[in-house]
Image (cartoon, rainbow, N blue to C red; front, side, top):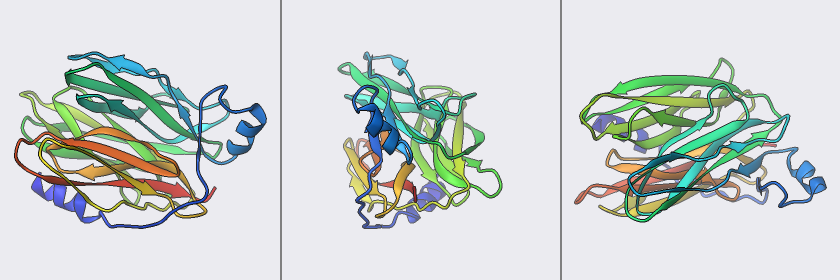
Length: 275
């Protein structure tokens, strides 16, 4: 577990880049049709409906769906509230244009959950991998891209609510998801890679401290002339994901450190390409 965390966080380096080209965040009816057609020629972000997650419940939000003729290059979501975690963020199995998320509210006020998907007309491939995580352990599932492709985004899911995801991150030709098992039974973690034949860059935010019991977020920005296609981030095994989603022309990653006394670190990572 300790070895995996060190490997993941060693890659966190500050890439202080900005961008003047933003992926558009589109909700149906919010932008005139002629403007939607123009921005959709590159990559666009589409937002699914928001759903409530009552205390003590887990809910799958209505999915975020690409326009006809487009496919997902990546996606994510966000759950806001008190003791909440994002337990799924994945391309819906059997589809190429849909992203879905599932949120868990372990207590406190009703939380809000929604999914977002980044869409494009460019072709994309997929890869998956899964791993069994024993009680008290942390493991990683690494999903490979098809030959000749690189990750444009990725996601994960779990089979039980005792499995808390802490890393959702790009590798050179694969997508890594890591989680720790806080329960008493083995659970399965699945990683989903969304892949493209086009070259991508993967800028990161700087590493931020996450004090015990606190929630922290970071945003990684795409370089000028590139657009965000997906993203994720990394943190330690006591620090669990609450949000991983597009933010302007970059990617936002938010985590909560559930340890009562140990600090941790985290960073965000964006997947970017020339449109």
